[in-house]
Image 1 (cartoon, one colour):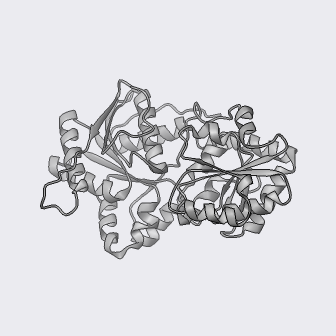
Image 2 (cartoon, helix red, strand yellow; image 1 turned 90 degrees about the horizontal axis):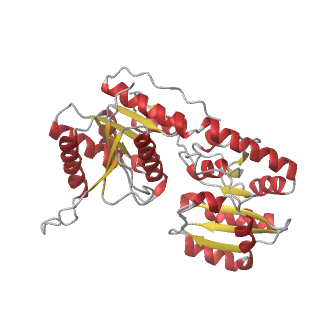
Image 3 (cartoon, helix red, strand yellow; image 1 turned 120 degrees about the horizontal axis):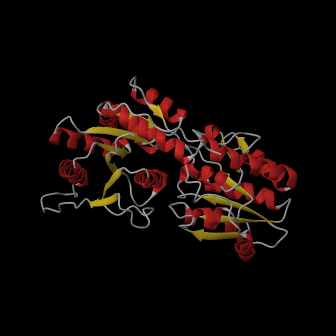
Amino acid sequence: MAKKLKIGITCYPTLGGSGVVATELGKLLAERGHEIHFITHSIPFRLGKFHKNIFFHEVEVNDYYVFRYPPYDLSLASKMAQVAKMQQLDLLHVHYAVPHAVCAYLAKQMIGNGLKTVTTLHGTDITVLAQDESLKDLIRLAIHQSDAVTAVSNDLIQETRNLLDILTPIDLTYNFVDKRVYYPREAASLRSDFAAPDEKILMHISNFRPVKRVSDVVEIFERVSKRIPAKLLLVGEGPELTKIQCKIKNMGLEDRVHFLGKQEDVAQVISMADVLLLPSEKESFGLVALEAMACGVPTIGSNAGGIPELVTHGETGFLSDIGNVEEMAEGAIKLLTDDTLHAKFKEACLKRARHDFCNDSITEQYESIYYRVLGIDAELPVSVCE
């Protein structure tokens, strides 16, 4: 039997796909007998109910009056070192290079090289921050000083290499969803609150940043709604929300669009949809498309970043060039007007989500990486995902 580990996890606990994946991974590792210590500024919002193997350590920032800005990074590094020493952690798994991997490096220097660090790159730390020349050397240091580095798509691995001249190995570990949570839900009663029986539902879920191209979502929907009875559900909030509300009003679509705000039970909400719209300019992975896929909902999206690694064009959705709203609308109409084709895509979505992005097998991938950096020879059971 493989040794059970003591693992510290640091992530952004209150927002973003990286925080969701990090928290869900911690919960799955705890179920497998490992002792998990979350080291963050607040309790991860997806943590859920009490588990005997999960512990939370709050990072408190010193607000000493000489500091112009509270030094969260230094407080985090200090807390990581403190928890690692007191709890005798085997390793720290940090999500995002900046600031978390840099803080882990400082913690490692404080307590000695016995502590191992694993860094997972999720996207923004490379696609946005690494574009800043003033941060490149810091991100490169964080990656080089990690004992293992993982990334959530091949596209992100390639971009990391190109931007930072990284030659060290990077493990591909795709994101995942827990199949016990994400599956097609009975949504007929919820659908009736937003759409008539003969209307189709298109959905978009995001943080409404410019990179998500929510304006394209509205353009696609307008074209679809001219051809078939349909409603658009927009889930989430963000800086582009007011702009999108004005656009919808100016296009005369108010009575066909519903704003649902942020939603906790994504699986229940997404099960209402007939298609998901994801026309993003950049997506290192596209976790929401996987969540939709696991609920049997095909994606109409862009050929951006890691989306093509997730959505199989012509099988689990349709992909088009960024900004090609006309072609995306045609793809949506094709799916929404052919029940047989939609059923075929739905079945392919469920099969691909359960097999290629199975939570059991991807958790085992992370376990293998942990044992490798610790120099532990461990035979792990191979999960059969269906």
